[in-house]
Image (cartoon, rainbow, N blue to C red):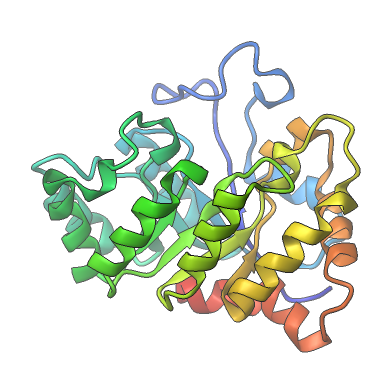
Length: 274
């Protein structure tokens, strides 16, 4: 594998005033993780660029991530957070979009009890500002959100959407997940990340048992499937960075060289415009 773009990397500082997750008791995740730590975890993996993704529902974290990105050419872009239902969302989005490495936003939909929150009228102001400024939406969803997300994608066809962690199904995914993901893949504005699947597996499960699920994602999304590590959350499953890379290689052994290059690099560059 070469020319890798990691489309889903986290960093955080547990001593930061804006830090809320992970919390004490979250095991190996509860320590600071820096860009230097990420480079060390990657070892010899030829990761040419990374996209930093928010982990806190706090404007200050997004500002901090952008400062990191602007000081390090290895960081291709930042997916930040904005309170999309705030009256101030359009102004905040305009200000963030003026910073060249802001590529998208991620509301923490999985933590919001209202499955249809993204369809609310007070959220539409923020979504419209995202479209106006050419941003993308990272959809941190669960299978319960898939029908809503299809409605949302139809309502906002000009907004590129990527489904984080393939909607976090419990492998191998149930009938509703299969139906919902297949329907979303029919919408050309919707992409999907091949990430996070290991953390949804049962403890000790064989990573190659993900093969049928990955085959379906490849079938459904094709060139709109992009690879991400979800580091350091990946470590909660007991895997190192190289383990997930090796697992990905095994799970996609049937792809052509060009298709694999697209998966691990080209798709992320196209989706995020980096």
